[in-house]
Structure formats: C-alpha cells, structure tokens
Image 1: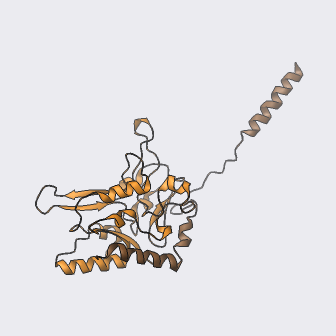
Image 2 (image 1 turned 90 degrees about the horizontal axis):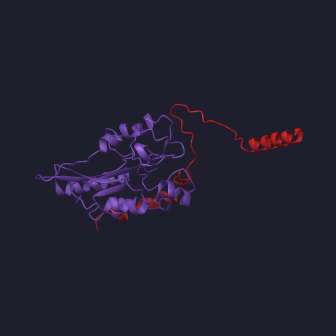
Image 3 (image 1 turned 90 degrees about the vertical axis):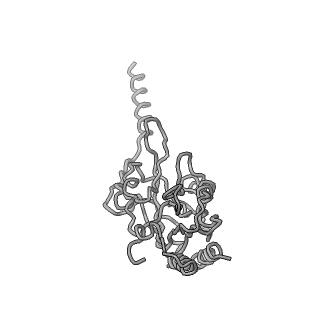
Length: 64
Length: 196
C-alpha cells in the first residue's frame, strides 16, 4: 500500500513538473514598444528598395 | 528617406469601391473587417464628394499614444504598424483614431473583441517578410517587394495616391494647377500636421 502511494506521488510530481511553465511577464513601460522586431525596418534603409518604391509610384500614380 | 502618406483626390474618386475590394482581396481581410472604405459626403446632393478612407499612418499617431500595451511602432518611412501578439483588443485606439481605422473581428459571442486589425500600408507586420505567418496575421507585405499598397495601385482614376509624401504632394499640386480648383486634401492636415 505504501509503495502504491509512493508511486502515485512520484508520478504526480513528474507529471506536474512537466506542466510547469516559466512565467516571464512582460513589463510595460509607457511609450516603449517591446514587441518583435520587424525585418522590414532594416530593408527600408536600403537605397534599392527606396528607389524601387519611388519608381513604382511614378509608374502607378502619374497620368499617362 | 521617404515619408509614406495616403491622399485621396476627392475630385477624381468615383466611388467604385475598387480600393476596398483590392484591399480585401490582397490581404484576405476577415469577414466583418474593412481596412478601407469609401465615404460619400453630401450623398445625393449636387456636388457630392467621395473619399477613400483607411489608416492614414499619422505622423503623431493618436492610436499609439493611447495604447496601454504599446503595441504600435512606426517605421522610418512613417508607416504605423502594430504587433498583434501584444494587442489586448481593448479598443482604445478605435476611440482615439480620427479616421475610424482600427477594426476588431468579432471572435466570440457577446461582442467580445479580437485583436485589432487595420491597414498596414501593405507592409505586413513584425514577422519574417512574406512568410505564411505574416500573411495570415497581417496580410500582404508588398512594400518589402518594392510595391505600393494594392488599393492605390488598383485605383482606375488614380484618385488614391500612396507613396512618398513629397511625390504625392507634387502630383496633387500639378493636378490642382491644371484644373484650377481649390486643393481639398481631406484628412491630410489632421494626419500629418500643419505645414505638410
């Protein structure tokens, strides 16, 4: 009986330990964005993309 | 560095709603959400005007100012985007926005709001560019491919202009000079401030 109780306790401990999740709450600060970084921000710094967008605008918006 | 802006030329808009359709098609916008819509002022009266309205990507975005979890960020080009993983769907941005841009998909009974959804200037969100995850969450990322928003590129009368603010202003000014009317840049000053 004692072995059974010990086995149940051991199984319960292992099972509950498996369910444990590290809780790291995000601490908000006013006006500070703490989300994921957008790779587009770096891409927009390149002159190639800037000139492509400008060319695209001239093609799309100017009257033919 | 360009400063991306929207401008709807009310003299040219014919209320065809192609911009709305293009947006929905390009971004697979969920049912019940309209990132862009066409508003008609003085409908049915002589001199009625139509304008296409979406997020204007304001210079000093009021949505970002009121967001309690600061899920908004602005690119160097002035495109206002947000992270849906941070958004709690509180709806403050909806009340702050003068253009009614933030939209909330109804996800459950009793009007429970989902994550906020709005026009991204077809620039996706803070995930890998043009990945499936980005497309499902934020829609297309045309800017990363060197393209401009689908709504503006689709506009048959070229009423809706989207691009670098200086180029947009040049084109609009030349149009006004040609037709000798008064400039009517609806929403421009509210979004981008005085003197722009």
